[in-house]
Length: 282
Image (cartoon, rainbow, N blue to C red; front, side, top):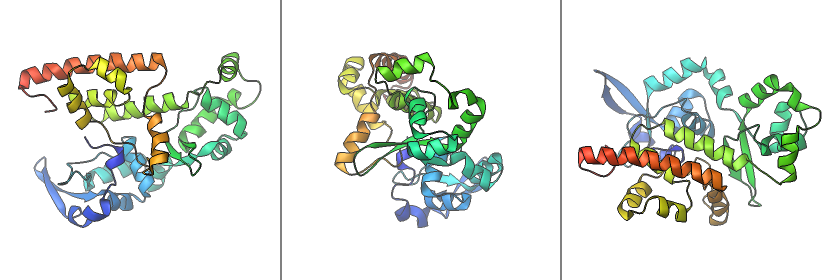
């Protein structure tokens, strides 16, 4: 399964071969291009293009030999047209990093923005780990503008009682909200039951996964199909360790939800295996 983190991996090495590749599609021929060229044709930076893929705005075609994603030029034209042109497409994937920049888009102070985000009113679209190994959340600028237009009462005045209770308890819903969004986007990109089960399994702590999937052979299949970390996930071990904690469900009720969802997905995956005689995606 081609996930966010592998969209541009080794793109420079495969670009020359990919950009002349073509496949038969519905009786016609459509040229496939690699991630770097696709981003350039859409007028997007690498991170913007990766976000477009993450959000499902751009859909990958058949992967090249070695697993690098390729994109039909017709799909690039569709995404550009559907968005309303290159400028509109760029606006859809524009992201701001950190409370200061996000607060400026909302027109509020950083402390108010932080409270709104920690209390779950705003959902991050990604993250970065800075040099101090602190999490810097990314937000879609378009979503911030929409929130400001739809919830003007949240931008001034006293915090509602529910928010005050959450802040007094030291709550921070940003990691959980981001995981929910991340998992949801990954699930939208595949209909295969084993791949869907692998997405859900990937956010469970190891002990919970072993209890939920006692069959070692099934765990091997799920591990092989697990999604790669999202684009921008750090490679430096110390920073990667911080980021990996964001990929794992934490609160008991969140873990319970993913376990229940995994049980349901595995039922469909096992039924598929019974019908095909093979364990794994078709």
